[in-house]
Length: 631
Image: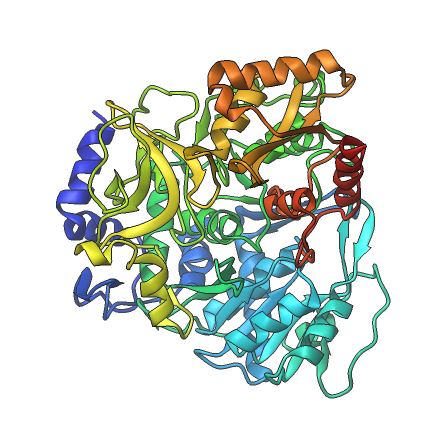
């Protein structure tokens, strides 16, 4: 008989060392840990100290040695390039061995940093796995950041080697990564010794003599190499991943080795409900934490195929995701609400034409999931849709329905209850618990479970200040998530957006998500973003930007209906000062709405760095809509 969520969760909180110690036994250790948890220097929590392991060995070698070498490991699909490939675990091991030798030949040693700036190709995973194989620390940067952003990450990490490609593809257009990398290396004050370039034949590039190395030539020279996996102490860093900070300077989140490995392996079984025959597809990019955890490491640690996809959800046609899922027999799909809202614009026939019989669960995360999008996904895909919540800092889910256990009843709009190991609470500004049904700050009680961030790269003080000092003046040491939430009487959480995404209208505080959910309920609305803008009388007012579904026309009646919904569901105080229909919302390349750009346009202020925007034309479209309103 299966244990219940409550039983497993209670054990993970009451006896974390016993619980995680047992989970660690499922993986390979060159040397067993001396203890399970060292919390003597809180809030710096060290999991499995003294233990020696290797992420690459556990993700690849272990399966080959276990007789599963001919099983598919990487399933690559690039509608952009018109290419696909399947690599077995044995083939991945061979390629990783070769690239590990390439890195060593370039002088990379244990503890050195390697920056990976690659498109969604199998070689990107090979490069990352080769880094951890030799104990090097990788820092993957999303292939679309500007040269300036890349330069900062090179400087901060002290990367000795950059791995890139001639170009990636985005809706048929090349993104010239080598040229951007060249600019970054020029700008960075830190000297980059070598740039390894994968030539895909997409875009011409010029080699810098003595610095640049061709991927194919270097791999050919290392074709006979066998590089053993280097034992790495559990608490040593595996990677640095930069995330946005309130100061504007990105924060280098540091992930350990052993704790991260154990957390991901456990999550595949208990949260994602995977078995040995599953096929996992996270539609993210390896430049984001989801890509690290659930494109690269999670599925491979668990020994199941991972789909690697280069492209967008609606190109070359709006059914391409479902076509890929059917082709590879995907059983667990992990995506984002933004993608579902995009696909919601198209007729259900784009889903219905493909055989998704093997698809068992659809997980969505990355931003709050509004109820209309949730209902659309459930009704159209005819599968359980699991909303879950986590952060770059957490490394894996913090709130979720555990599909590897008897699942709890679903509540649309809620990612369900705290994940195993996470002791979460909703508190007020003093860190005291809020009553059920009342909004507050989402916090986690120490110790944080395995897999969570260890610190910030070379900045322990900022780590403590950013995450642990919010309630310090009240004598409380709590992890501050930066998000508002409500917990109901059943213990279910509902996320209300970032604490800095709160609109204060004449002293009345409301989360942007509250407004967005109401507007999303209108049958004509495909996407919506609500922001707070300066108001001379009220201090702040609400601006709402709406994208309509295909074929729906903008009318005064429609405007009135949307305003009526807001007034009816929230109150007259929430009546928007600005309501504009736009063709597109300005988004980052990872699909997140750039609220600060909308705010700057409304207030006539500088928009700041636009290097991560998906399409600059969306800014002009919003500006034109606002100018039309002014006239």
